[in-house]
Image (tube, rainbow over all chains, first blue to last red; front, side):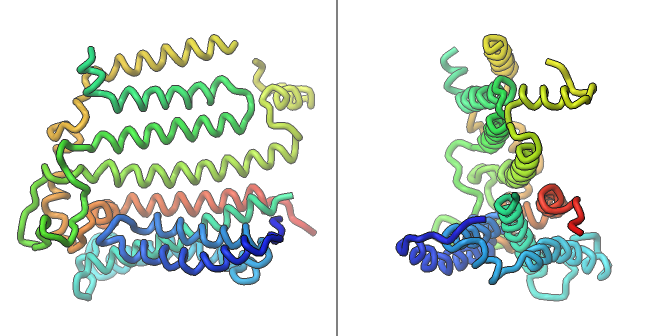
Length: 138
Length: 139
Length: 92
């Protein structure tokens, strides 16, 4: 178990940096259409923000805000969202994961956005879960 | 000979890196060093496949919003001006699979250490063989 | 024993370099990886999918089935670490 750091410089810096890291991670996921990025890269950046908080403040602080049961639920939610998008395209009459049939404007772009968000959710939750399991093993 | 080296410098560099990883995987007896060797091996393959898609005088495979690029959907782009995007895509999958494999290997190493107390390969084999398991491989 | 490992490693590296004599030069635009299906992705990617990033367009639209398999691999790795380190033994 990681204990809380004693130095006030480390604690203040971790607390100041975490919102900016999370915003940058969300930007990388959402802006994957026009700049280098996408689901995997943004998911890893979001996971690293939680790991920074755990290193600076101890694992109990992170577990109070983002419990391990919620992390496990998030891991499955991403894969489920990905598969459900494909099944929706199947029910509307096209092939599996064929986004051209969705009834919105720019259907292929919107389908890709849903895919990237689901990949980002799964990658973030998987890496936080692996980090927590590796740290709290006696 | 020199123009072979200059024309193929990427494959020679990555084969040297691959052999460093291969030596670490087979020649060291500590399990953590074997895991580091596997990681080096894997990254050399990924970098080599990404370098296969390079083109002379080409730019990155993203249509930026400036004067050089035309974001008109009617225009057919010139395939010679952009780097091949297919190796980048396939190696994204390979990177993520590599990280997942390293995570599972670290979890296995934690369990081995907590049960046997050592991470050296020859001590582990001695412990397993002396505990009465005849199917442990002998060196 | 260490010299045996060094000899095997050097011989393998030398054989690999010898086997790469026919690989085309670095940066050759007419090498086989750049010829068959990737010009189609570059030329008509933006017109068909309205996404300027060609790598994301190929990853999430043309080859989205591989990305589904990759997300499943990440999920399976997280579940494997959970089962190895946390599960198994029932705490009564």
